[in-house]
Length: 307
Image (cartoon, rainbow, N blue to C red; front, side, top):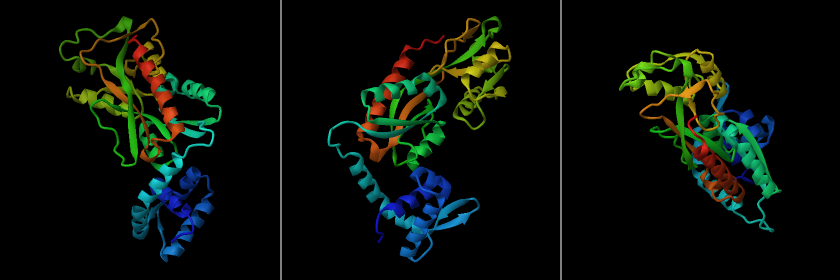
């Protein structure tokens, strides 16, 4: 029905990202080129494939039906292309990687540098993304591989096109000043700790939600008096005597001498995973990158002491 697959790929990107501009950025096309592809497809179908919805673009019913029929074929073709061996058998290409902040601090750049030294024809693009955004970037094809996490006991976002690989369990500690350690925690420590001020990441982030849900089990809400995106700033907050912090161990710098980890009967933890699209799971460049990241991040977690 179409001369090539480009209009279908453009249509899928617009569906996943919601705007012509974002779809063009992922596909390496200008917004006008994206619009031309959509018009071309509409002429073939003799019906429009998109409609405006505020600042976003949504697909028409006929476009949704077309993609539902075409997506399995596109995925099969993409899998074949990704698994074609190179003439020399070397690993080459460009792998786009997304990772959350503490994973980057824990060694993602060094892992990529080590891998590039072993495979000179392999290139990388690294961007910092929170897990929710990273999952969407993988699903839309904006990145090839993402380091993500979800809190233990909570399920990660489900997406039919994404496969995940577990890296490890990243424990989070409650950090306090040594000269102001909470006492008399008793058998219900969260009830006692709820009387203190806390620092958290921003509202809507996974770490903020987990801190709130942790205290919800004790029937109260934490007194969050600061919202800071960087966990190193959380340690500064505690050192200043402003309150307590819940800080994961992955990517955490050594604690200053005036800070200590509180002993709790049950430590919260988040599960760190690697996510990629199912059709790319056998791609040699992505697989090699996944193996290297798994090794570096897993070793970091196993070697990091509580304090």
